[in-house]
Length: 162
Image 1: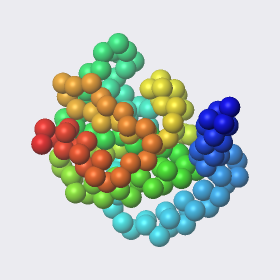
Image 2 (image 1 turned 30 degrees about the vertical axis):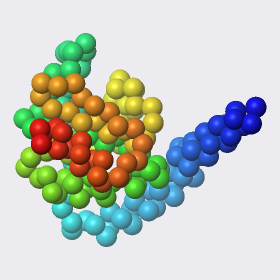
Image 3 (image 1 turned 135 degrees about the horizontal axis):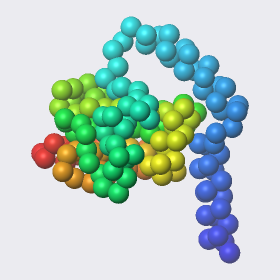
Image 4 (image 1 turned 180 degrees about the vertical axis):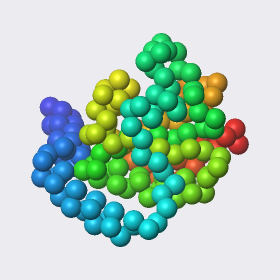
């Protein structure tokens, strides 16, 4: 009984920290506007993509739903996030740093799951952040939850065969 209670408390705490309440979204939008204004002149190495971009550049699951066929010309990292998600905000600067470091070797993308709900549903993205690592000739790998830079670096090096 004690174990069940502790598990329940932990789950409630986790989901409340990454909950999608309107208040979280409104507060996040205010913060995002401030961040956007202050970083408008900085180049981002992580490209925000849509459902159509994903199908065109990564995997056309509409044409080939049963088999992953990578469409990119170099490995990619796709960050499925939401603007209200705390762990997503922790991962974003790490991925931006790595995107700059691996520029030209690996493509980095972001998908806002609130704006691209159909894509998140098709790919069964249930928890945020979810990071997808994909390359030609291999099944994509998913990572769920916030991880540190060393973890992401090792996954990227694995993509590159290093």
